[in-house]
Image (cartoon, rainbow, N blue to C red; front, top):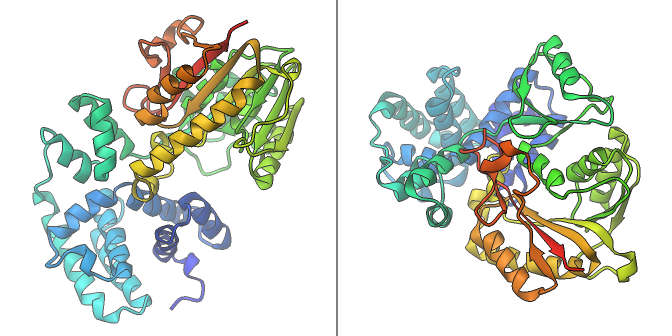
Length: 452
């Protein structure tokens, strides 16, 4: 067994998947593993590809494997199944990895894990998959439920939610989009530079990049060059999805206002608000965990954001504030299921259920109930989640308005840029989708105004 398993890319990927199966977050474990490793940039990229690919497409991979296996995967040892999934992902999805390398490395890995008796089994299954993968009878799009589950890799509960939300063709398109890798996007820090300048610097450094479709500060990195991205140390940008960038714009924040960001960490939207108000608004940023409050503070320093005051506070307890001390604008980017960012956190497909979503919906109402009194008369409250689940979106709006007669729902279309029209629903809320909106994450937002 290798003394430094993180220095073998496939073993490193296996160890991350093992930790995720034990309940860890993929991004945190992957980051820790890569920091310990001595892998070169190409192998580090392979580890990342394998981890996120297997987690995103696990159900598709399993469907392919069972075509060539003489027993259910549930009856095979878990460590052997992980190796099979890693090998199968390479055979099915990675053209740049030769088939013999995918098979032989999988056999070597299962031996390294002390499963010598399974080496022949792994070798046979993967070689059969390589020979027969073109003949797999995949579910067709017309059978939308099986297509979502076995081609788009959606568990049953998630496929039902997507089918309840969208008609068949769009349900299929959303499922396909969530089965792909998410784009790598940057928010230009307009306190220090502008988009044209940063685009020029990126191209000069060997990166391929283009402007985002909707947000004026957004850049999509289409292909990274060999070197680092320019401007990291200088605070020229923040890594942030375009859908997330929409949220600060929708709050309608202005210089001179007092703003509350209720669930602020890690601080991307907080620092965006500071940039949009040119450091001329007072922004109070709250988070439940002290270490995450430190992330907000570090991000503010890096990006040159002033007038951000970060504090630890659990919003399941109502903050003390008189109406005279209230806020002109309140942002509640609430804890949610994260269904809209499954490409970035793919383990959510396998460790969540509708029970979790119902619990989260109750928490979201509790947080809304506690921040509502902090909004000044005439002030605005923006509720947002990176989810498309109905309980966390449309139903959350209905429940809040039913319990808060002093608030009305505003139509976000009224003051939005004309090119944003496709982002909004008939009721004036935001719903972004990757299959509709240039690959951005699926977000929801609704803005409420407190009556005078």
